[in-house]
Length: 360
Image (tube, rainbow, N blue to C red):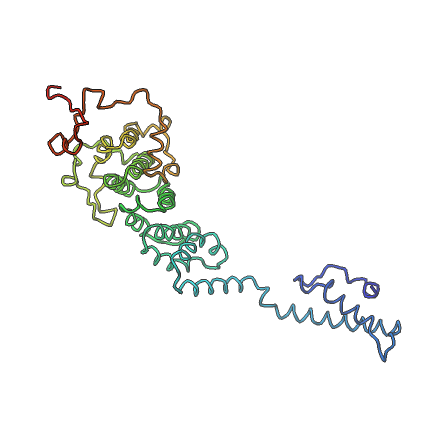
């Protein structure tokens, strides 16, 4: 339009910074309006249009200069980040439903921390969340872990808290996959001291005794991986005088401090018990601990993610899909011998069962 002809510099790049202070939008519209202004119902003359355009341009320049001196608050990135942090800290002091609370714990390290000038201020929230236990406690430790590894937070009780979260309920929780995947991340480093690795090995071994079959398999996998990463814990495999039961075992199962539980003075006799487990897949899987785990060429870590979701249903399905050459049946051996061969059992089963002869 006429504004473009009157101000040939209008299309030039704005030297004053922010895009909203540029010439093409606001100033050209003002110039065009000034050029087509009417006075007393008549169009301005060429000289009048020139004066009107010059006045509009001068006013726009003055506005730009004032804006540059004032520095708009919304354009201040540092201030925005500070306001973002203050808003989140105020929000986290409010009560939340459990599902929303868990979503915050899941996404905080990826969607909140990168935009905060001081992410360490979230440490109080994560520390308080650890006491919720279960997956929430593990997710809170994940937030602490990110602050430790990326923002120089010092939290010396990290592994003490992690040790305290491990109990028998972990193997029966519906969300155990996320729990044990994070546990694998936290214990991945081969730089952990031997006493700490030994404490987690012994804790897993003890929990395997009371765990369901899928949990026992998972515990064996963790013990295998930790023993392979920490050769110094091999004494727990080969020690013969470390106790063979909970009564003679020097391991203090109720001690919350992994440094004082005396795990390295014990042995993992529980894994020997796993080789005699009533479930065939558990006893077969426990054979991996009989390999020389110091030979890193012939052995490999067990991928924990593949077995985190195992349960009774998946174990039964795997057993049904297995191809066997022979399936031994008691009826083919001359009759049922049974565990409870007495009058009560015979009465319950009726006359349809033929028991093996006493001489067999």
